[in-house]
Amino acid sequence: MSIETQLTLRQLRAFVAVYRLGKLATAASRLSVTESAVSTMLRQMESALNLRLFDRTSRSLVPTQAAQEIIAAAERILGDVAWLGTRMQDMGDCRIGRVHVAVTATVGSVLMPGVVRRFRDAYPGVQLVLDDCAPDQFLAKVSSEPVDFGIGTPEREDPLLASRLLLRDHLCLVCATDHPLARRRQVRWRELAKEPVIAVRQGLAYGMRRRMEAAAAGAGVALNVVHEVNFLSSAFWMTASGLGVSMWASALAARMPYENLTRCRLVGPRVPIDFSLVHKHGRSLSPAAEAFVEIARDELAGMDVL
Image 1 (cartoon, rainbow, N blue to C red):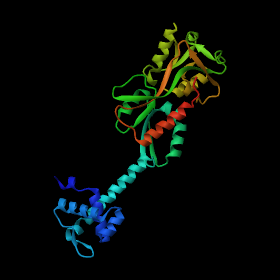
Image 2: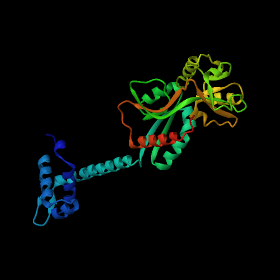
Image 3: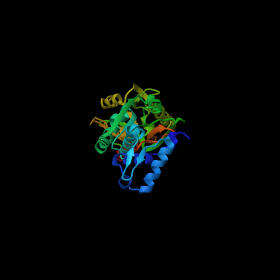
Image 4: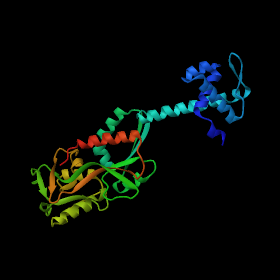
């Protein structure tokens, strides 16, 4: 059996206490153990090292040359262990740590500001890294090693990733306030047959285009797409300019930076949009990451969805 497997932290603590205090009784009192326990731990350590560490006198224990050689290393080990314990406790209490989140630009700009403010106020010692990306890069970004998790609306599953639902939303119709449909509480997909539509390009935004066209086809109509965009912000200003109507998750549409835009519930069919936490399968999240998730869940639960 090697020395490393025989030595224990309790033995090192007993050795350092006796070395610094000079007496078994004083060391035992400092360690809150009996004198016999301290004596036993010293003998065990001497046996493991095959060295005498103290010369016994009638009044005290005198460190040998061997003890003088290893005292600095023993104190360094105990100091490192104490530091490690403090750091782990601080991480458990979210006083320190690091949270790396992947999020698409749209979700980040529209849904995350409140989450980030609350998290930084609650856990100022935790470093927060927000890694924005395009929707078609989202799952690959979450799969990368530095990222703890992502928040988004992925349309497909990945066997290497797991997800937790944070918010269930639905597609809604977005149009200018002077549009004939603006005063309606809900609009059916079949009513959009002749409406000019502003839509994301195929393959972008978590398959949003595919979901829109599938819903319309299910209602027996084909969407009249007159403008294709790469970014949600472009769809908003085009819609606000009266160039057409668009369809987005209602939570995103609720945060539109345009006063002349409004939302309507889209029905027949309803198209669900799930905002989910996505992380590597089988990987646990740190306490700080879990704290961020709980704040995100609470913040998203208060979103104005249709």
